[in-house]
Structures are given as C-alpha cells and as structure tokens.
Length: 410
Ligand SMILES: Nc1ncnc2c1ncn2[C@@H]1O[C@H](COP(=O)(O)OP(=O)(O)OP(=O)(O)O)[C@@H](O)[C@H]1O
Image (cartoon, rainbow, N blue to C red; front, side, top):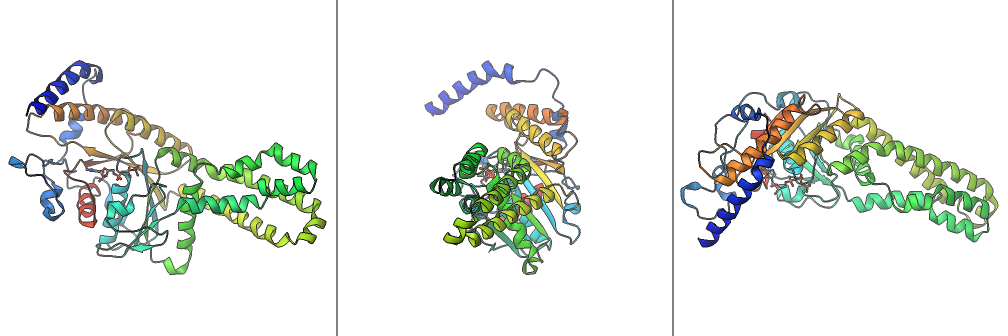
C-alpha cells in the first residue's frame, strides 16, 4: 500500500514537472480522430477466458476497453481479400511496434476468408512461433493449426543465407582466391584484388542480405507448381533499418557481383595452366553460376517490391513521437524507391476510459500528440489509417490473432 502510494506520488511529480514540455502547444486535432472510434468494448481476456492468466482483481479493473475501429471498411480489407491472383503484403516498421502480431493476424484473416496463405518471417529475430504459439522453426513450410483454410508459416534461417553468399563469393575472387594467387606468386592480380577490397566486402556480407535472400528463397518456393495454390503471402519483415538496406541491396550487389565476375574472368585466363593442373575449372564455373543466379534473384526481389499490382508494404507504428518520426522516414525512403505503400497501422492505442487513472490520462494525451503528428505529417497523412487498440493481454495463438484480425483488418 505504502509502495503504491510512493509510486503514485513520484509519478505525479514526474508528470506535472515534465508534461508541460511534452504537451503540444497547438490544439490536439487527434481528439476527433480518437472519438471517431466505436465505443464497442473488445476485451481479449473476456472473449477467450481460457487464454487468460488474469490476476484476481476487483471490478474487472485489469480489462482495457479497446478502441476498435468502426464496423465500416476501415483497412479496406474487402479490397485486400478480393481476387484470386497472388498478392504479397510486407509488414514493416520500428522494432517492437507489433509487426509480427499484425502480420500473423492478417495471415489468419486471409486463411479464414478462403485464401491459401503463407506467412514468412524474414526478421533474423523470428517471433512467428511465439506469436502463433506453435513450433514453426526449421526453415521449411510448416502448417499452422487453427484457421479454416490452409495457412503455412516459414521462418528463414539467416545464418544459412549468409553462408550461401560467402561461399559463392569466396570461390569467385574473395579471400580464398587471393590467398591462392599469392601462393602462386601472381602478385599483380593479387594486388588488383586488394585494391578492390573484395576480401573485406565478401567476408562481411552487406546488411540486408539475409532478408533479400530470405525473400528470394520464398519466391523460389513459389515458382514451383507445387506451391501455386498460395494466393496470399504475408511477410513479417525485420525492423526499419534492415528494410531500407534491403531496398538498396540489389543495386549494390549488381555492381559488386559484376566486379567479382569480371575479376574471375581475368584470373581464369591468367591461371588456365595452373587450373588445368589443379582441376579447379569446374568448381569455379559452378560457383560463378551460383553467384550469377543470386544476382538475378536479387533483381527479382527488387522488382517484386516495386510491383504495385501484386505487392503492398504496410507500415506498422505506435503512437509515440519516436515511432512516428521513424515511420515518416521509412515512408519517404519507400516512396523514393517506388515501393507501393497505402496503409499505416497505428497499433497499441489506449482506449478512452471513464476512470480517473492519472497515468492513463497522461499516456493518452501523449498518444494524441503522436496521432496529431501523423495527421499532419506530409509522408503519413495521405495513407489509409488503421487503428489497432492496445488489448488487455498478450496476443498469442490463433484465437487471439483472429480476435485481433477482426478488429484491425476491416
Ligand atoms: N495491440 C496490442 N495490444 C497488446 N499487446 C500487443 C499489441 N500488439 C502487439 N502486442 C504485444 O507486443 C509485443 C511485441 O509485438 P510483436 O512481436 O508483434 O512486435 P514486432 O514489431 O514484431 O517486434 P520485433 O521488432 O521485436 O520483431 C508482443 O508481446 C505482442 O503480443
């Protein structure tokens, strides 16, 4: 009791001392934004009591009344679900904002609406298994139990992807070849290798490569007739920084692989005699082909990201100044790269409440400021805003994801 009082006292002094700096000077437009929500109450724990590990509390005080979107078509889900041609949805944003929960709930909703759906994690720190509360690890397509229609999940192993690039590159002019050339006393060519700094480049693969390879692997899967039934593919991507690097990656790889292959040709002609002794020609040819295939796949990934008929990047954010600023930068970069973006999910919005909880009031005001920023942000204000409430417990398992999907994807 004493502890609680102390906590309250310190919170009060924090909020009163600092809130004047945090409160926006101009009127908060976002009030209207919040009030436009339906007053309907959504409580995950009361919908699925079996999921709940609720502490015993009087008067249901633990429950958060969510601010669910109105019944009308807010996210434009009708548009997302219609048609049987294959569509890709990539969900991305700042770390921890709820990308996985939103991606998994969208995948469940697609599957429950009759689409054969695949949800893929390209985030090196996978959390699909945690989100679905099922073991989906292993780098292969794993069926998800629960939805009405087939839903498969795939978590790509980033380490393997990195190895693939390193092996292919090394055999084509990276440090392995340099050592070999040095050993053979072919100083001039070895020097050229040094100037190009290829060894350095190839031993530390460029950031974003894991994700690019992960996406290209999915595309490989999907090219085979065996997987032609998938009509919706949802990607849970890595946090913003990775996504941005991924977008510039194909050009970077195009240039560096081009250099490697050129150099390989030079080395091949200079060392043909040695090669015939050591019998390395076949290995080199194989890895050159492998590298060339990798380059082609990266170009396909680049094209997929920019194909507005089949692909959409959905930005997920939360109503905080930092997350909104990062989302704005992400949207600007995506726009620059011609990646289609139409929707912005603002996740974890606190519901209005009749109680006089001071913490909630301050927090809500803070969120309104962030929502106001979105409405006035030149990059974000034109997007379709999807509001996702903060629900009263962690979203885990298909029933909880269905619950979230029914609120968010309308
Ligand atoms: N609307 C919500 N209400 C309540 N909890 C939520 C909500 N959205 C997400 N969460 C919870 O927040 C945590 C982080 O969510 P999630 O894993 O989806 O985020 P993420 O952006 O994918 O994270 P990372 O960047 O680490 O991959 C999880 O415990 C999830 O259950």
